[in-house]
Amino acid sequence: MTDQKLSTMAEGIIDGGRKTITQEEALYLSGLQGEAALELLAYAGRVRYRFTKSDVFTCVILNAKSGQCSQDCAFCAQSAHHKTGVKIYPLLDIEMLIENALTAQENGATNFSMVTSGQMLSGKEIDRISLAAEKIRQKTDLTVCASLGELTGDMAKQLKQSGVTNYHHNLETAGSYFHEICTTHDYEEDICTIKEAASAGLRICSGGILGLGESWEQRIELAATLRDLNVDSIPINFLNPIPGTKLENRPLVKPMEALKSIAIFRMMNPEKDIPICGGREITLKDLQSWVLMAGANGLMIGNYLTTKGRSIEMDMEMIGSLGFTVI
Image (cartoon, rainbow, N blue to C red; front, side):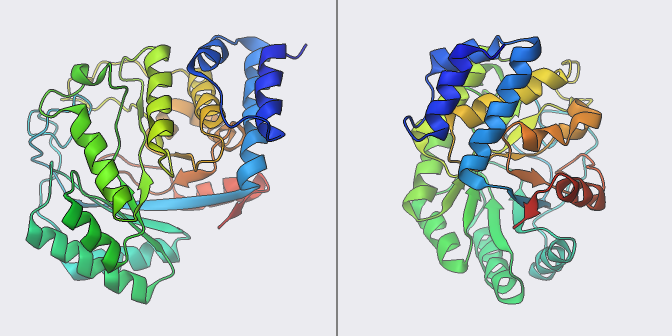
């Protein structure tokens, strides 16, 4: 039997009568179990189709500068506060950045993101990223993205002028839980970077990592914060506990909990892009294809910053076999 509250929420969004659901309604959905939980996934899939049809975008990221980050984010292998054995190297040269972008396009990616460790890049490093972005735009059809830590307004404008389209800056978790995850900067600093990037005309990609120890209420708080900031894309990651980090012993998010989370983020942000990124392989295993049916419309493909993904060919085959189209 269909859950009436769920049906009313979803049909209202699908029919255009409402734009979102409340945090209280989202919390109700988080408690659905069994057949009702499966109905939630199905409704979220219908909401996704209402706004994005069967289109799926794919993103490849490049760890363009690795290790020795001054921040103490509890999950991060690249933090100087952890001993993880991660590779440490400075910002790659322009030729390497371009070469990786060309490979990403050859492998079927639609988006290519240059990602760097550290709280903020220097002016010279921003210059290098900007020149690389300009050349990548000239040589490929890729949407060029960047994830470079905190930005000033001038940095954001420079990136926009160079051809960067999307700026990625995760909030990681809810504001009420952030102090449990990072103590070396304030949550508001991350929000300020998002606002600076948006003011410069960059499209904003900001999400978080689920499974850090947050409650359902805090997970929903994050979804609401991103909605209020009106970000364009909400990447969802699942914790892959890295030995040597503070969260190395955290249990994995259970598969159905992960899928319900995707569905609730979709219901709270119906019109936004929702790509599924790090941790999906280890968290969902054989259920990875369900993310698209549960409301996602994007996938990060290939390897992540410090962990391995599965083969790009497998993901492309999965997308096609479900009747979705890579755009």
